[in-house]
Each structure stands twice: as C-alpha cells, then as structure tokens.
Image 1 (cartoon, each protein chain N blue to C red):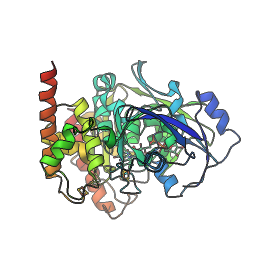
Image 2 (cartoon, chains in turn orange, brown):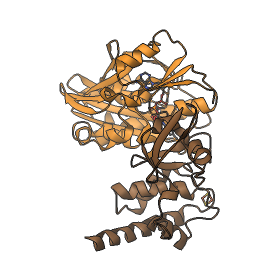
Image 3 (cartoon, rainbow over the protein chains, first blue to last red):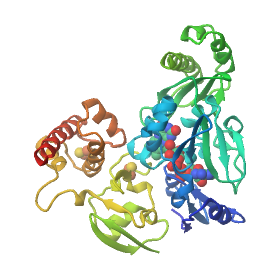
Image 4 (cartoon, chains in turn green, cyan):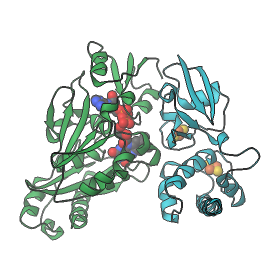
Length: 264
Length: 160
Ligand SMILES: Cc1cc2nc3c(=O)[nH]c(=O)nc-3n(C[C@H](O)[C@H](O)[C@H](O)COP(=O)(O)OP(=O)(O)OC[C@H]3O[C@@H](n4cnc5c(N)ncnc54)[C@H](O)[C@@H]3O)c2cc1C
Ligand code: FES
Ligand code: FES
C-alpha cells in the first residue's frame, strides 16, 4: 500500500470540506472494496477520509411511506433490521446474501452503490424499487444515479448520505451467485408498486438496467408465465470466464421468473 | 500515528502508519501471531478477529480504524489453561489439519454462536462462506462447531 494521510471527520460537512480542493483524497466506508484496491496499489490517494465516525450517516428510519437508510449502514444491519424485514423483506434478504458474514459486518450500502460494481446486488434493488439517492448536494432517482460500469452521477467532491426506498406492494430478488465471491453473475429484482411493475437486472450487463419488455408483460399479468414469450437479447451483455453473454441472457429470464414467483 | 485499543481485555497502544492494517498491527506491533493472513483478496478468512463484538477481516481494516475499539483475537479465547469450547471441540473432532485456517474459523464460528446458539448444519456451512480451508474438506470443522454449540448451550443452562 502507498502511504496516505488519514482523516476521521465527525460530520458530513467536515468530510465535504476535506474533499473540496483535494483532488486525490478518497472516501473510505466499509473498506471491503477500497482497502483491497489500496493493497494492490491500484490507487494512490493523498488522503483517506474515513466516514466511520459520522453518526448522521448511520441508521434506518421509517419515513414518507418507505425507509431511509444511511450511507454507512452495513449490509448486516440491513439484513437484520426489523424495520426492513417488515417493510421490504426482499431488501433484507438481498443484504443477507451479499458476500460473507464478515463482508456484511463492514461493507455499507453507500459504499456498494458509490462503487457501482456491475455485479453488485444493491443497484438492482434500488432501481426496481424506484429509490431516491441523497447526497451532500442533491437528491436524484436511483435510475439516474447509476450511469455505467463502476460509474455513478457522483461528482468528485460529493458524498452519498442516504437512500430513500419506498415500500413496494410486493418484491423479490433472485440471484445466480458466483460460487466464490457471491457477487451476482445475474441478479434480477422485481417490484410491484403503485407506479407499476419494475424489473432491474444486475451482473448481466456493464451496469444495472431495466428489462422494460418484462415490465410490460408483468404489468397486465403478474405471473412467471407472463414472461414465457419475452426474449432477452445477449448483444449488450457481459461475457467472461464465469458465463457467456448467451448464458447470462438465459439466466436473466430464469432469475426473473423465480423472482416473480417468490414475490407471489 | 499512535493507536490505542483494547485487545483481549488489555489496553494497548502502539505506533501505526495510516496504511498499517489491523492484522499487521496485531502481528508485528503486538506480537499476536495467532491471527493469520492467507490471501490478498479479502476472501479466505484466516485473519478474522472480533471488533466491538462482531467478526471482521483484520486484513481489510486499517489499524487506525480500530482506535478505541474492543478487539478479541484467538489468543483471547481460552481462559487461562482452559480452552474455549470451540477450541476444545476442534481438537476433539479433528477440525484442523495444518491449522492455518483455524483461528479464523474459530473467531467466525464464535460470532455465529453468539447470535444463533443452535444453528443447523446448513446454517453453519452458510456462515463459513468467508472462511476457506485447504485441508479438511470442512466436514470436521462443521462437526466441531455443532459440538461446541451443544457444549455451550449446556453450560448456559447449567449457569441458570
Ligand atoms: C469477499 C467479498 C465478497 C463480496 N461479495 C459481494 C456480493 O455478493 N454482492 C455485492 O453486492 N457486493 C459484494 N462485495 C462488495 C461489498 O458489498 C462491499 O461492501 C461494497 O462493494 C463496498 O462497500 P464498502 O462500504 O466496503 O465501501 P468502500 O470499499 O469503503 O468504498 C468503495 C468506494 O465507494 C466510495 N464511497 C464509499 N462510501 C461513499 C459515500 N458515502 N459517498 C461517496 N463515495 C463513497 C469509496 O471512495 C470507494 O471508491 C464483496 C466484497 C468482498 C471483499
Ligand atoms: S487474509 Fe484472507 S481474508 Fe484476510
Ligand atoms: S486445516 Fe489447513 S487450511 Fe484448514
């Protein structure tokens, strides 16, 4: 690891101040992605700003017909939260299947979505549930937040503070996990809300995307059978040692059907 | 930087650069070499310790992030000469061969048993997702953890 300065601010304002004008400073959340990156010398920050001491970034509260989850809330906290299990059980279940127990004890929802790994689980949930992402500067729809592979709408000096997730009528997530890491080879999150049905896919493409044809098919008939005649094109999907684009396309449909069945 | 924390119930402090990992601080600054490093990718779990009561990979946390924390390592599990029930069960049930993964296995399992005192075999196997063993094939590790859970439930009942 290259050397760097370490800061542990006590508020978002203080963290933002440390970032401003310090181009090579980087934020540290659970460190489950960023510390391995540092260890491999793939990053050389001048300063690391640890968000771990900021109380306002932690915790889950019920708000405006849904849940507000602070950026520094760990996967383990989301998985075991009574509020999440009650309002959006599919989200708690998704969190309980991220990586392993020790990754869940440190890794955070804010870190996961800021990183926007193409195989990460949370992006699918947030897009399907129509969540709102809150930052130190603004609020934006999750769909507009995830812009590409490892890319988000976050600016250099912007800090993700929380996500607001509306409570769906029904929802479920189904993942075909990489057996070593548990990242999604393909993960599909299906949600039915008062605004309609949304299907979001992670792992399959360069970044999370909505399967609009599936959404239309499910709008009139929310059943796995409604997806029988939908075709998933392999063209824009990922191909790697774990799965070809064609296999991923196949898995998108299988996972979507399982999610619809699980949502009931 | 000076870093202070409680390790196995004792207040300690030492020097650490911001880039010093918690596992490096434990091993090289404090000489607690029971915590192992088995990979570079945060996947093997040989380095698992408890920080403020929950299991974490000490290779994926900076020492400075543990400032003021309560840390427990494998060296803190036995009570004097008396092995922790998990340690005793690993010995009894041949839950180790080379032993490299064992400290992490035990620290991880101890966290499981704290929240789930009577896990099913399936729950134990799921929980060990983040602990890799190159020798045993896991079977005896799972057996040891289930046996330790039994012993610990018995001890808890006896204490009531
Ligand atoms: C063995 C292993 C298995 C895993 N399996 C899975 C899996 O199955 N599914 C899955 O989805 N993920 C998986 N992960 C990733 C895990 O969920 C990470 O926790 C997550 O990707 C990053 O979150 P973090 O809190 O650790 O962030 P960090 O690693 O601390 O940060 C990640 C990035 O986000 C930036 N950042 C962090 N917080 C903020 C913020 N509030 N505002 C702006 N920028 C911020 C950081 O600067 C950094 O660039 C796995 C990781 C490991 C090591
Ligand atoms: S040394 Fe392998 S996970 Fe920490
Ligand atoms: S006993 Fe050798 S790695 Fe587990």
